[in-house]
Image (cartoon, rainbow, N blue to C red; front, side, top):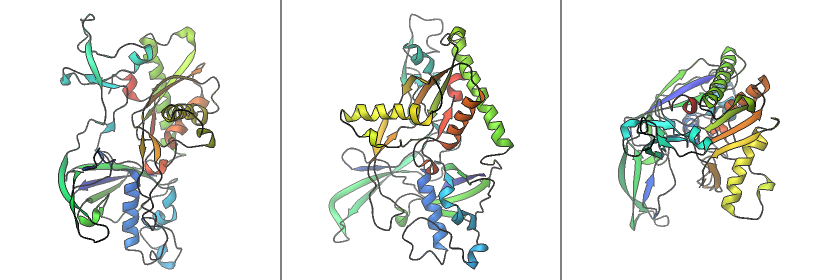
Length: 397
């Protein structure tokens, strides 16, 4: 069952991002990662649980099976905490811009448009508004990045580093926190397995980093959306909606003379809505250039592992980038640093083709990919994907 958690910031929020060069600025992301929301919920549950003391994992809950647990508000959370999915929290209506999203370089009021068709044809991406009636003077375009349809305001706060040995302020170690300002709203989708309903009794909690010094205080609103996770009428409607998007995407390619009837192929796109952590295998460790190896692995994993079983699969276009991220394991009892991992950036676009018309097996396979996500840690919001996203065939909307 799906639920929506809406958080209203009552103090600045720091959802840690990579430090900027020089280490002077500590910026916050434009969204709240699902892992931070999971840790915040677990921290609030364990704060009122008499059985939480002495556990090895922090910011994590477990079901003890005691008599008090049977009537506890958080019983379903504790029983299935590792199976509950927390999506990233974005401002209402916002999404990460696909890598095929462009805007006019000279006039911002021309809006955002999709350049996937031009990239598939190998053409230059130009502003469609500037080029109307003036094919000899095409408008220049530049790629969009970050959040679309939303603006996240920030504030700058100066801090003085603390000497880890003396526990006092450290001379000459000023740094700035670029935190998300108060008064903004973010929404996350929390999915429980099956038709299970999650109860909620919190009106306030703390999310993100530096909560002990006043950051990350939020007011919460928890709403059940009424959509079951799987095996229901809503599930059937979602399959029909995906099939319609697949048909619309291929119709768009035919109408714009990229896909011809004689070709007898079905095209589909995978657009990453959040960062994706590819799964590593022993075959990934080989000789050669690290950048080439990483990029090649990201491309081949989608085709060979995620889309396995589709005969004649062809990779048509890849618009992807990646970044390295590290950090700390907030569930460990000690300050255990996570090893750096390779992340596919949100907004990456993959276009594939299979021979023949779309059948039920293809549609079901794509639906499972969209429901389950790609890569690792999908339960923390990573690997969210959209198949044949409306943005690519509906005029960039």
